[in-house]
Length: 626
Image (cartoon, rainbow, N blue to C red; front, side, top):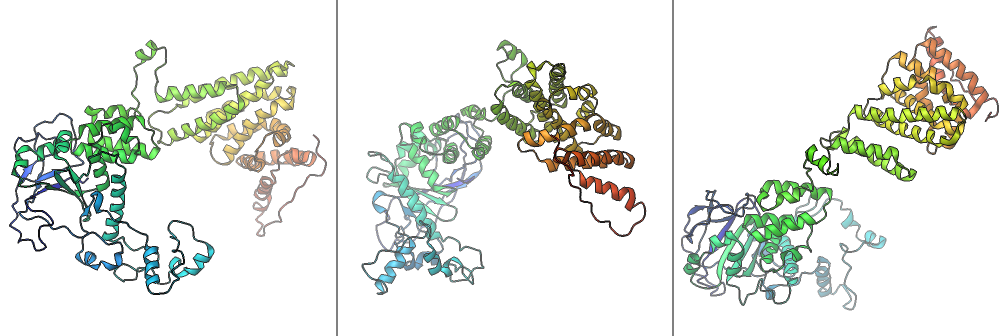
């Protein structure tokens, strides 16, 4: 519903079908009164007062005395003549479109009519003109099934119009624009939905029963669509405080005949309004709402709050609290509940699903740390569980999950909970301490814990990825570059156990080469001096044993790392690499690109050459030594 849906009471002293020539309309009387869904219900309501149903106002089960914006009421001494039902063929009813408005739709059980697809109307026209064989089947509705190639070729003009689509007024629209749906077509679609709603009523349900209904309720939308229902005054009054105020006993006595004519205008969604009214006739509202989705329940909740339908509000909140939500629905639920201010009705229980209440530390200690802590504590706990997990497959999956959570928190989309730099370094130091312990133990010929080297190296590699993603890996690089004890013991550890350690070094090379780690020249030199030789020795094992290893990415990272040093150091490292590559082949990283860049820097540009020297092409001159 809109923020102010006008509620109009029409006199029913004369029936809609009295005379084809109704008497002249009497002058309409206008008056205003203040009312909102949360206002105190007046004892006496004049039939000339304005009735309004605000859908966006706040709702509280206990009404309080307050004033609200005024609303307009129109009362006519003569009944509004009912317009004829739209015919099945929209082509033979130009009068409705010329009038610029759609007729009110009678939703009574006997007032419905069948609506056929447009292809059947074309088929009937062609059949009457003698263009088709009477025994041929009707054409297939292309909107309901995928067209074949023959259909697409036969209706090429329909799929690819040359001059654009044709509007209902005969105007040619630009290419790519679809004609607007006419009011009559919207009325037909509305009737189909309403007929579906009324057809799903259980036997014996008195909703929209013309024989017993004493109120003829017309719902009108902002764009002129309308539908009429037969409802019962005592049902509306007993379930809705809004209707109880409007359809008071005094108002009822002022009406001269039955049924009473009432109109609610400016409805945002007539279909949802009908669903809300039908809930007043249900004994088990919770069971009825189980058939709906979250979006429909939110629509019913807004209308129930607007008309002070307390049972509908509580049932919708119970449904939303128990039903599963998608991420989009979660945002809609939080938005609607914050607008309606239904905390006193139980909306707080629903919002607990999307808002975390911080439990004091004393309560956590009393519960044995069972209660949830803040976001950093939870993330740190998850991090430790992944580092200590025993199932390797599960560890790989959970590493990706935790990394995604940390990345979202770091980008500001994950709320206030995040893990600090100190916590990450603490976890990193713990893994490094264990790696040093197992590595030195294996170097002393104790192979009982050799498998732990690869495990702790993998943990360090994972945490290093997190540090680089957060651009705080410079301290770890300095720490790793200073691990001379590990580098010296590298030769004593079998290559099958130690190559995972060199993956840490390669990740640092890639980070420096991409500009993700910015450290001083001394730190870069120390890293290469400590770990470049062990990296060369393990490169062949890494290339063969590590699945998914991008050797070109690592080679580019190493080249760029070397090129960040002074030319003299570049020359020393690259000439040593040249000799090693010619003797190791594929077991040595190919950093030919870095070698070429160094050569041009050192000799071509320095000597003032104007022509670019031919590119070098270095290939292995001997077989692999592995």
